[in-house]
Image (cartoon, rainbow, N blue to C red):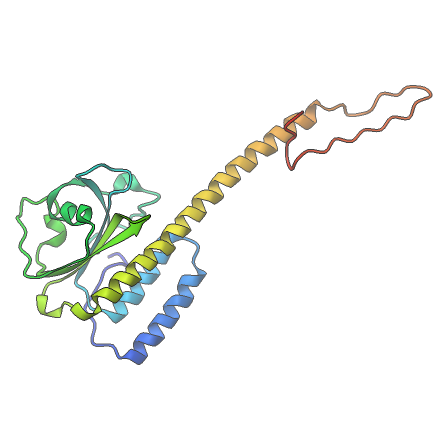
Length: 230
């Protein structure tokens, strides 16, 4: 079962929560991979809050009413949404789509979903949920939903803080992904410039001409790997 799978836990004291959060923040600060960061964060959250199920969706790069399910606590296979987008379920409409495109935090209790709904398999058997949109440039491109089989266990009072934490964590993850993409782009450009530089240097004479009565010297200095005016 995926490490993201949530489970019931007993009540946690504020002292234990403080210890868990402190260790979690230290672990998070060491991570450079978004996928590992999410697993570590999920483990920490699971220790502090009893949740029966979790599902995340994204509409990035898609037009309404389409969206992808990026994570689900019921999956038995670990899928990296950044490296394996082709494995993510592509859905249209339904309750999950409405919540994602609605872009509004919601508390839903006594949930009833039509078995024909495109997202039924992700929400069947639950009574309550917290809907947490995650924003980029003011636009909700992603959404995470926490679910409970018993509506009486819904932590209403904690919802504002959970929403806040979710979005801060989402920004941290997005920055890691962006940093990785920028590093890849830089390395690709660096390889190309090095290749250009090698070609340019190969065109230079290996030795200077020998002319009686003259002493010749030459210097060729590029901007980093290649010379633009060569």
